[in-house]
Length: 347
Image 1 (cartoon, rainbow, N blue to C red):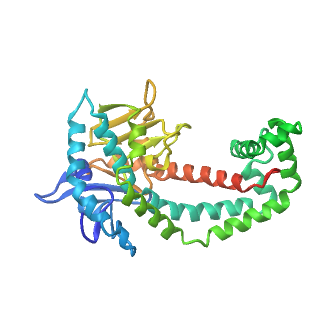
Image 2 (image 1 turned 90 degrees about the vertical axis):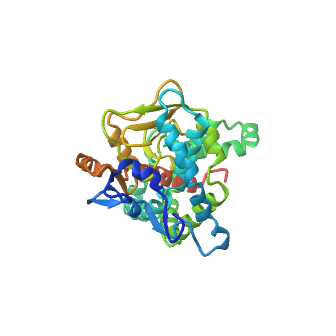
Image 3 (image 1 turned 60 degrees about the vertical axis):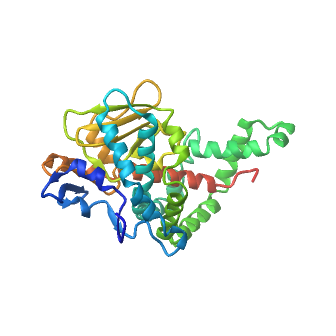
């Protein structure tokens, strides 16, 4: 990988889903939303200078990841070979590394943020549309707003309790004030979103990802979280596909998306294909959720494409699901962000 062409989806993983075309070439089928094609693994899951930037502090990231390829390849091989006993430390380390180095955040966030901003602006252009989007007319108010109200109450609880205002009274007061002042609040929200669209999102996201890789190429906090899961290696009856995010996470709502997008507290299950018929699964509690159709679950967690064996042409039918998990995540986070912008009585 070292050099200008830098793989964020390692070739040692890609080759497990391919077909040997010659002694040195392995081919896979790449399936995107609007097209699919056969490609060498050398030309899949990579980007020029993906781990590089103009900042000198990022200079060693590519070399460090390249030097670790053999180590993580061995971890994947050992995990795939196991059936009953799974070394939880190794499988957690592998999952954490594959997830953080993927392009999920850098490829998808800037594009989807712009798309969703345009969509949201069209929805909230009118005051009535903004009320519908935020959920101002629902009873009770959406959880994001209720949480914001509760947080503000906690910061002033001593004062509010002394004057006889309970948490519920404060909630009713905030709701009334939001209703009475929503016209001016609506104008401020539209201005803020328009301003947000002018930010250099690509550069911000890319720099943040590189900083994360520089300091935590194998995130310790993520490993500690994953080590609390139960792990097993599952043999499937049919071929699997490989998502561009490498590792699929399931959040508390049951949504499939790139694991890198889910915080530790919300993460409920994890799974990632080790090869065409071997799946690593981690879960909290007594059981795991991979969905009724494992290929659909993987496709929905994929951001831009997924990879299949060249002969697995039926996998093309799952292309429409690509990107749904990331869109769900971003829409939810944008709603939370808007809720956080709403002024509260005690601010």
